[in-house]
Length: 170
Image (cartoon, rainbow, N blue to C red):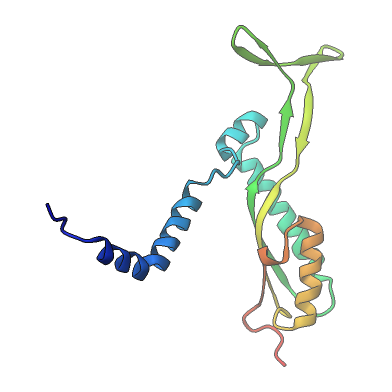
C-alpha cells in the first residue's frame, strides 16, 4: 500500500513551511500561557470597591497630574489620560467555618464595628497619554516622562507624550 505522500516530499514541505509553523506554535503557546491575574470583577467584589470609585479616583489623579505637569517649564497646558490595570483594593481577614467564608469584624468602641484589613493595594496603571503644548520638544518630553513615571510607577514604554494641535511651533 502506497501512501499519498512519501517521506521525502513531507520533509521538503516541513522544511519549506518551518518558519511559519514555528511562528504558529509560538503564537499558540502564548495564547495558552496563564497570565496569573484574576478577573477585575472578582477583585472588585473582594474589596467592595466599584468601577465608579476607581474611575473617580483615576479622574482625580488625572486632574492633579495635569495641573502639576502644566507647571513644568515648556509644557504649557497638559491633558492626562490614565488607564487602570487594577484599582485600589483591600484584602480583608476572613474566617472559614463549615465551608463558608466570613470577614473578621472587630469592635472599635462606641458600638462601631470594622472589618480587619490584612493588606491594602493601590491602583496599578496600564498606560498614560499626555497631550501638551510642548510635547513636540525632546527636553519637554523627557521632563514629562520622568514626572509621570514618578507619580504612576509606569515604565517609559507605557507612557505616550504628544504635542497638542496648535501647540508651540519651532
